[in-house]
Amino acid sequence: MPHTPTSSVTRRRDPASPTGPAPAPSAALSFEQRLTLIDAAMTVRLDTAAVTYEVNTAHLATEPVDLADVVTGPGEPAVPGRPAARPLPELYPTPVAALLQRAHHRLLTGGWCTGTLVDADGARCLYGAVHAEAGGDWRLESDALDVLLDAIRRKFGDQVESVPAFNDAFGGPGVPLRLLGQAAILADARGL
Image (cartoon, rainbow, N blue to C red; front, side):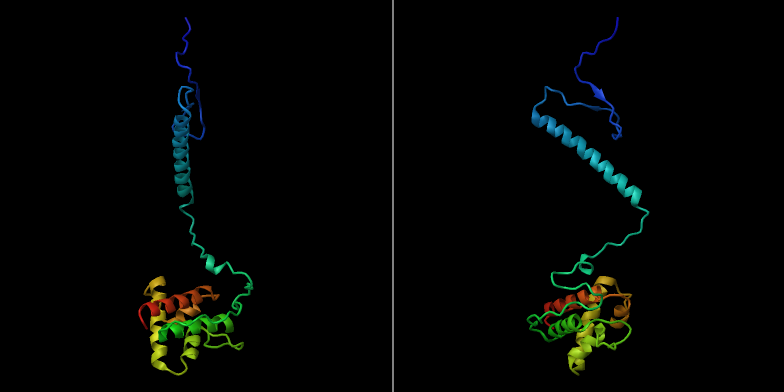
C-alpha cells in the first residue's frame, strides 16, 4: 500500500539556503504570520550573505574614501590645488582661531602648495599661510602652529613630526585644508 502524506505542506529545495529545504507557509496561517515567517527567512539569508561578503573580501586592502576630498560644491571648479575663491566668513572671536581661519581662507583663495613655503604662483603651504597671516607676531604664529599640529596628531597620530612634514605628505589640498579648518574650531573651543 503506497504511503500518502497527511500534511498539505509541500517542501521545496532552496539552493541558496544553508539549512536545506524551506517549508512553504501554510494557508492556515494569517497574512501577518506568513509575513513574519518570510521576514525571518529573508533576515537569515541577508545575514548569511553579509557574512559571506565579509569573508570573501577580508583579504582586500582598502582605505575609506572621504567624500570631502572628492565632491565639490556648486560653482566650485574641480581644478587640483586651486579651489574657487570664497568670501572670508565672519572670523572667530579668539585670536589663534581667527588666525587659523584667515590662513585657511588664504589657501582657498591663493592656492595650496607642497615642498616650499610659497611657490612661483603665490600658493602657500600650511606653515606659509599661518606665517603670512600672523603678520610678524611670532607668539601668535607659534600658538596657531601648536594647535594645528595638535589637530593633525589627533587625526593621524603622534608620528607626525611637524606641520610642514604633514603638508608635504599630501598631493592635494583637501586633507590639509580640512585639518586647518578643524584646528580653527579646536582653537576657538579652547578659547585661544
